[in-house]
Amino acid sequence: GGACARVHWAYMGSGVGTWRVQGGRLTETVGRTPCGQSLPWIALAALALALAPASAHALEPMDVDVRQGPQSLLQGSEYLADPTGAWSLEEVRREHAQKFEPVRDPNMGFTEGSYWMHLTLRWPERPVPLTIAFVLGRNLRSAHAHILHEGQPAVVHRSGWDVPLSERYLGAGHAAFPCQGSPNTLTEVWIRVQGDGRPLHLNLEAHGRGSYEQKQIKATSVNWLFAGAMLMLALYQGVQFLGSRDRAALFFVAVVLNQVAADVIGGGHLQQ
Image (cartoon, rainbow, N blue to C red):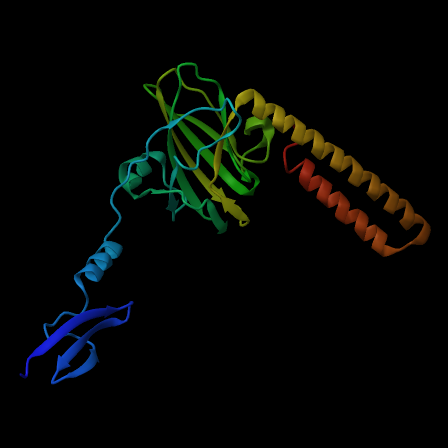
Protein backbone atom coordinates (compact mmCIF):
# COMPACT_ATOMS: atom_id res chain seq x y z
CA GLY A 1 0.00 0.00 0.00
CA GLY A 2 2.88 2.35 -0.73
CA ALA A 3 4.48 1.77 2.69
CA CYS A 4 8.26 2.05 2.90
CA ALA A 5 10.46 -0.04 5.21
CA ARG A 6 14.08 0.93 5.80
CA VAL A 7 16.92 -1.02 7.35
CA HIS A 8 20.09 0.99 8.08
CA TRP A 9 23.39 -0.86 8.00
CA ALA A 10 27.07 -0.01 8.10
CA TYR A 11 29.78 -1.06 5.70
CA MET A 12 33.02 -2.21 7.36
CA GLY A 13 34.76 1.14 7.45
CA SER A 14 33.25 2.39 4.15
CA GLY A 15 30.16 4.32 5.18
CA VAL A 16 26.45 3.89 5.86
CA GLY A 17 23.85 2.36 3.56
CA THR A 18 20.10 1.80 3.50
CA TRP A 19 18.02 -1.15 2.33
CA ARG A 20 14.63 0.16 1.09
CA VAL A 21 11.58 -2.01 0.43
CA GLN A 22 8.90 -0.24 -1.60
CA GLY A 23 6.36 -1.52 -4.04
CA GLY A 24 7.66 -5.08 -3.74
CA ARG A 25 11.19 -4.06 -4.70
CA LEU A 26 14.38 -4.19 -2.58
CA THR A 27 16.86 -1.47 -3.40
CA GLU A 28 20.16 -0.42 -1.83
CA THR A 29 21.59 3.05 -1.43
CA VAL A 30 24.96 4.04 -0.07
CA GLY A 31 25.75 7.32 1.62
CA ARG A 32 23.98 9.45 4.17
CA THR A 33 20.71 8.07 5.47
CA PRO A 34 17.56 10.21 5.26
CA CYS A 35 17.75 10.91 8.97
CA GLY A 36 21.10 12.71 8.42
CA GLN A 37 23.34 10.22 10.20
CA SER A 38 26.79 9.78 8.64
CA LEU A 39 28.11 7.04 10.93
CA PRO A 40 26.60 4.70 13.52
CA TRP A 41 26.89 5.96 17.06
CA ILE A 42 29.27 3.10 17.90
CA ALA A 43 31.72 4.20 15.23
CA LEU A 44 31.49 7.78 16.42
CA ALA A 45 32.27 6.72 19.98
CA ALA A 46 35.26 4.66 18.85
CA LEU A 47 36.56 7.60 16.78
CA ALA A 48 36.20 9.95 19.74
CA LEU A 49 38.14 7.57 21.97
CA ALA A 50 40.90 7.22 19.39
CA LEU A 51 41.30 10.98 19.01
CA ALA A 52 41.03 11.81 22.69
CA PRO A 53 44.29 12.94 24.32
CA ALA A 54 46.02 10.42 26.51
CA SER A 55 45.22 10.75 30.18
CA ALA A 56 47.86 11.61 32.72
CA HIS A 57 49.77 8.63 34.03
CA ALA A 58 51.78 7.95 37.14
CA LEU A 59 54.22 5.06 37.16
CA GLU A 60 54.34 3.05 40.35
CA PRO A 61 57.65 2.65 42.21
CA MET A 62 59.58 -0.47 41.29
CA ASP A 63 60.47 -2.96 44.00
CA VAL A 64 64.21 -3.64 43.94
CA ASP A 65 64.95 -7.36 43.61
CA VAL A 66 68.24 -8.58 42.16
CA ARG A 67 68.38 -11.86 44.05
CA GLN A 68 67.84 -13.89 40.87
CA GLY A 69 70.11 -11.78 38.69
CA PRO A 70 69.83 -8.50 36.78
CA GLN A 71 66.46 -6.73 37.02
CA SER A 72 65.06 -4.82 34.05
CA LEU A 73 63.93 -1.31 34.98
CA LEU A 74 62.26 -0.60 31.64
CA GLN A 75 58.64 -1.11 32.76
CA GLY A 76 59.02 1.40 35.57
CA SER A 77 60.82 4.06 33.50
CA GLU A 78 59.56 7.08 31.61
CA TYR A 79 61.38 9.42 29.26
CA LEU A 80 61.26 12.83 27.60
CA ALA A 81 63.31 14.26 24.72
CA ASP A 82 65.38 17.33 25.60
CA PRO A 83 65.48 19.44 22.40
CA THR A 84 68.01 21.88 23.84
CA GLY A 85 70.28 19.31 25.49
CA ALA A 86 70.77 21.78 28.34
CA TRP A 87 67.80 21.35 30.69
CA SER A 88 68.76 21.19 34.35
CA LEU A 89 67.18 18.78 36.80
CA GLU A 90 65.31 21.66 38.44
CA GLU A 91 63.84 22.74 35.08
CA VAL A 92 62.75 19.22 34.24
CA ARG A 93 61.04 18.63 37.59
CA ARG A 94 59.40 22.09 37.65
CA GLU A 95 58.32 22.60 34.03
CA HIS A 96 58.35 19.27 32.17
CA ALA A 97 57.54 16.51 34.66
CA GLN A 98 54.00 16.03 33.28
CA LYS A 99 55.28 15.49 29.72
CA PHE A 100 57.15 12.24 30.41
CA GLU A 101 55.91 9.08 28.66
CA PRO A 102 56.45 5.39 29.49
CA VAL A 103 59.35 3.75 27.67
CA ARG A 104 57.53 1.33 25.36
CA ASP A 105 60.34 1.02 22.81
CA PRO A 106 63.84 1.72 24.17
CA ASN A 107 65.39 2.02 20.70
CA MET A 108 65.79 5.70 19.77
CA GLY A 109 67.65 4.90 16.53
CA PHE A 110 70.77 6.66 15.26
CA THR A 111 70.81 9.92 17.17
CA GLU A 112 72.95 12.54 18.88
CA GLY A 113 69.92 13.88 20.75
CA SER A 114 69.46 14.19 24.52
CA TYR A 115 66.83 12.41 26.61
CA TRP A 116 65.78 12.45 30.25
CA MET A 117 64.74 9.25 32.02
CA HIS A 118 62.94 8.96 35.35
CA LEU A 119 62.06 6.08 37.66
CA THR A 120 61.43 5.50 41.36
CA LEU A 121 62.87 2.56 43.30
CA ARG A 122 61.34 1.06 46.44
CA TRP A 123 63.95 -0.57 48.68
CA PRO A 124 63.28 -3.79 50.63
CA GLU A 125 63.91 -4.32 54.33
CA ARG A 126 67.42 -5.52 53.54
CA PRO A 127 68.64 -3.37 50.65
CA VAL A 128 71.71 -4.40 48.71
CA PRO A 129 74.09 -2.07 46.86
CA LEU A 130 73.05 -1.73 43.22
CA THR A 131 74.63 -0.80 39.95
CA ILE A 132 72.22 0.79 37.46
CA ALA A 133 73.57 0.19 33.97
CA PHE A 134 72.45 0.98 30.43
CA VAL A 135 72.14 -1.93 28.02
CA LEU A 136 74.42 -1.16 25.06
CA GLY A 137 75.51 1.92 26.99
CA ARG A 138 78.75 2.23 25.02
CA ASN A 139 76.81 4.29 22.46
CA LEU A 140 76.36 7.18 24.92
CA ARG A 141 78.30 10.39 24.50
CA SER A 142 77.36 11.39 28.04
CA ALA A 143 75.12 10.25 30.89
CA HIS A 144 74.44 12.17 34.11
CA ALA A 145 72.50 10.41 36.87
CA HIS A 146 70.84 12.31 39.73
CA ILE A 147 70.07 9.98 42.65
CA LEU A 148 67.57 11.46 45.15
CA HIS A 149 67.18 9.46 48.36
CA GLU A 150 64.47 10.43 50.83
CA GLY A 151 65.54 13.35 52.98
CA GLN A 152 69.00 13.58 51.41
CA PRO A 153 70.56 15.90 48.82
CA ALA A 154 70.94 14.67 45.26
CA VAL A 155 73.99 12.57 44.40
CA VAL A 156 75.25 13.12 40.85
CA HIS A 157 77.23 10.55 38.85
CA ARG A 158 78.71 11.23 35.42
CA SER A 159 79.77 8.80 32.70
CA GLY A 160 80.18 8.59 28.93
CA TRP A 161 82.81 9.45 26.37
CA ASP A 162 83.02 13.11 27.34
CA VAL A 163 83.84 12.23 30.97
CA PRO A 164 87.48 11.52 31.98
CA LEU A 165 88.25 7.87 32.62
CA SER A 166 89.16 8.62 36.23
CA GLU A 167 85.59 9.86 36.89
CA ARG A 168 83.74 6.97 35.27
CA TYR A 169 82.28 4.24 37.44
CA LEU A 170 84.69 1.26 37.21
CA GLY A 171 86.53 3.20 34.50
CA ALA A 172 84.32 1.56 31.85
CA GLY A 173 83.29 3.18 28.60
CA HIS A 174 79.61 2.47 29.03
CA ALA A 175 77.24 4.22 31.48
CA ALA A 176 76.76 2.64 34.90
CA PHE A 177 76.02 4.20 38.29
CA PRO A 178 76.16 2.99 41.90
CA CYS A 179 72.97 3.30 43.94
CA GLN A 180 72.07 2.22 47.48
CA GLY A 181 69.05 3.19 49.56
CA SER A 182 67.77 2.69 53.09
CA PRO A 183 65.28 -0.02 54.17
CA ASN A 184 61.65 0.61 53.14
CA THR A 185 62.37 3.96 51.48
CA LEU A 186 62.00 5.39 47.99
CA THR A 187 64.75 6.67 45.69
CA GLU A 188 64.12 8.82 42.63
CA VAL A 189 66.50 8.39 39.71
CA TRP A 190 66.76 11.08 37.01
CA ILE A 191 69.18 10.43 34.15
CA ARG A 192 70.06 12.65 31.19
CA VAL A 193 71.75 10.83 28.29
CA GLN A 194 73.06 11.97 24.93
CA GLY A 195 73.72 9.71 21.98
CA ASP A 196 76.92 9.73 19.95
CA GLY A 197 75.33 9.15 16.54
CA ARG A 198 75.12 5.38 16.89
CA PRO A 199 71.93 3.50 17.91
CA LEU A 200 70.76 4.74 21.31
CA HIS A 201 68.89 2.39 23.68
CA LEU A 202 67.06 3.75 26.74
CA ASN A 203 67.13 0.37 28.45
CA LEU A 204 68.14 0.20 32.12
CA GLU A 205 69.04 -2.77 34.31
CA ALA A 206 69.74 -3.09 38.03
CA HIS A 207 72.58 -5.39 39.07
CA GLY A 208 73.89 -6.43 42.44
CA ARG A 209 77.06 -4.41 42.99
CA GLY A 210 79.39 -7.39 43.47
CA SER A 211 77.98 -9.41 40.57
CA TYR A 212 78.22 -6.45 38.21
CA GLU A 213 81.85 -5.77 39.09
CA GLN A 214 82.73 -9.44 38.57
CA LYS A 215 80.96 -9.38 35.23
CA GLN A 216 82.96 -6.33 34.12
CA ILE A 217 86.23 -7.93 35.25
CA LYS A 218 85.43 -11.00 33.14
CA ALA A 219 84.51 -8.81 30.18
CA THR A 220 87.76 -6.90 30.55
CA SER A 221 89.75 -10.15 30.66
CA VAL A 222 88.06 -11.34 27.47
CA ASN A 223 88.87 -8.04 25.78
CA TRP A 224 92.51 -8.34 26.78
CA LEU A 225 92.66 -11.88 25.37
CA PHE A 226 91.09 -10.67 22.13
CA ALA A 227 93.55 -7.75 21.98
CA GLY A 228 96.48 -10.11 22.52
CA ALA A 229 95.33 -12.40 19.71
CA MET A 230 94.92 -9.44 17.36
CA LEU A 231 98.40 -8.16 18.23
CA MET A 232 99.90 -11.56 17.47
CA LEU A 233 98.14 -11.53 14.11
CA ALA A 234 99.44 -8.02 13.42
CA LEU A 235 102.98 -9.13 14.31
CA TYR A 236 102.70 -12.08 11.92
CA GLN A 237 101.51 -9.83 9.10
CA GLY A 238 104.34 -7.40 9.87
CA VAL A 239 106.89 -10.17 9.42
CA GLN A 240 105.18 -11.14 6.15
CA PHE A 241 105.49 -7.54 4.95
CA LEU A 242 109.24 -7.47 5.66
CA GLY A 243 109.70 -10.52 3.47
CA SER A 244 107.29 -9.74 0.64
CA ARG A 245 106.97 -5.93 0.74
CA ASP A 246 103.27 -6.41 0.08
CA ARG A 247 101.47 -3.20 0.99
CA ALA A 248 98.28 -5.10 1.71
CA ALA A 249 99.95 -6.73 4.72
CA LEU A 250 101.07 -3.32 6.01
CA PHE A 251 97.56 -1.95 5.61
CA PHE A 252 96.19 -4.93 7.53
CA VAL A 253 98.62 -4.26 10.41
CA ALA A 254 97.48 -0.62 10.59
CA VAL A 255 93.79 -1.62 10.71
CA VAL A 256 94.40 -4.18 13.48
CA LEU A 257 96.40 -1.76 15.63
CA ASN A 258 93.72 0.91 15.24
CA GLN A 259 91.00 -1.53 16.32
CA VAL A 260 92.97 -2.70 19.35
CA ALA A 261 93.62 0.89 20.43
CA ALA A 262 89.92 1.77 20.10
CA ASP A 263 88.80 -1.26 22.15
CA VAL A 264 91.40 -1.15 24.91
CA ILE A 265 92.07 2.56 25.40
CA GLY A 266 88.75 4.05 24.32
CA GLY A 267 86.74 1.45 26.24
CA GLY A 268 88.52 2.16 29.50
CA HIS A 269 89.98 -1.35 29.86
CA LEU A 270 93.52 0.00 30.16
CA GLN A 271 92.63 1.98 33.29
CA GLN A 272 90.63 -0.91 34.78
